[in-house]
Length: 186
Image 1 (cartoon, rainbow, N blue to C red):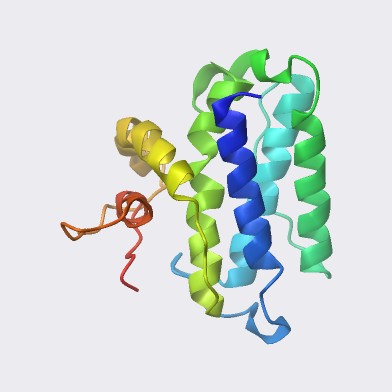
Image 2: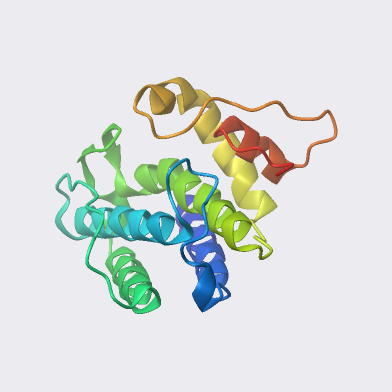
């Protein structure tokens, strides 16, 4: 298992841990993603995970498609999570190459880039509904390196926000959140 896959799986399960603790009456709570509720963030993440799974299975570019007619959000999330993990648990899948969302890369390299999404959205949902995020400092450190290099392009695509100020004593997770446009002091 590559380090990128380890980090991505850690981020997946961090997101899962938050989803499982959301009180039923908090899904409509506004998230730090402007105009999105906690439910909207989960639907977005389902679309992204389904897109990554499709690319892992086929080797072809797949666009994330956010579902819009989900009755049982946690069940839909669980199905998406399990499908993604199954798609990544195939021989040689990490070496599969293609022209994916950020250009030519392997699935392994793609995971190293897109790990920022479940990591940031774990914090978004947790903040929206008032539960602890428990984001991994190790995954945040890896994402800081990768996203730090790609931040201008990701901002141009509207995938991350403008950086927010960080304090001199900011921990790794807070530095990552500031880089992707979140206010960790929130």
